[in-house]
Image (cartoon, rainbow, N blue to C red; front, side, top):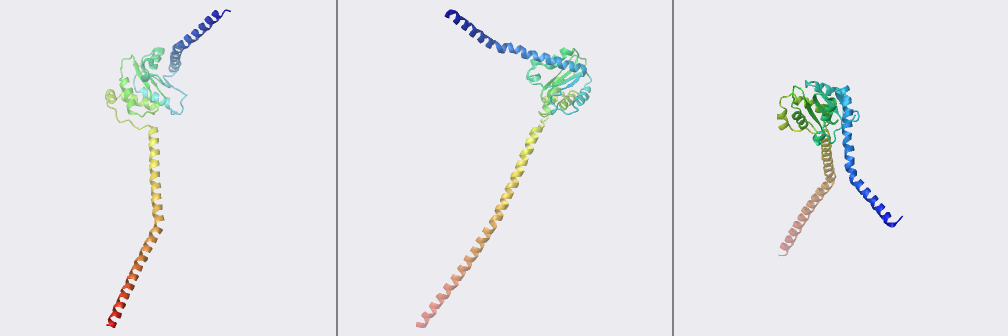
Length: 255
């Protein structure tokens, strides 16, 4: 094969690899986004069997009665409700264009309140589709988020959401939230800090007491030496006065 043809083949292969590498991210994006509808299909199938779906992949974040508590809470809304407790990374408020709640409604084709909430309760979304009775879903969801700590459980989040939605003051509570309580992690850190401060106080008190006790013998020694010096000074002073008197007496006898 001629060198010219070899060069052209090598150049063609290099250009093919280069364009393939450039097109790689763009080609991968549709595959990543295609995972979202399949996830919605899986959750929709579960919601057809039970309107409250709770993932079994987060046992540490959810109490054993999570599904029962959520079911009791949304029953108070008085409208059909569908709840999916599932990881929400990249969904809802983080990426409104990828609303899993909207996808679930498309799959089920039923009106009602759709809630997607993370097992930890910190992220998610709530939307209402259709229905004659409208609820302040968006305001209630954000108000519940503002009023609860970051690491609240999903049942507590849904319960507070329902409370706010039925309170008649959802917008007010969203715009003027109460002070947000500390999370369990923050409380644990504060408790550790307080324990460290108490330990420091005890250590300093023990050190001060030990220093005081160890200084007592030295203080006693200094006092004894001071007393002895005083006695010596007094003795030297009386001897000096006696000598002076004796000299005066001898002087008078000579005259």
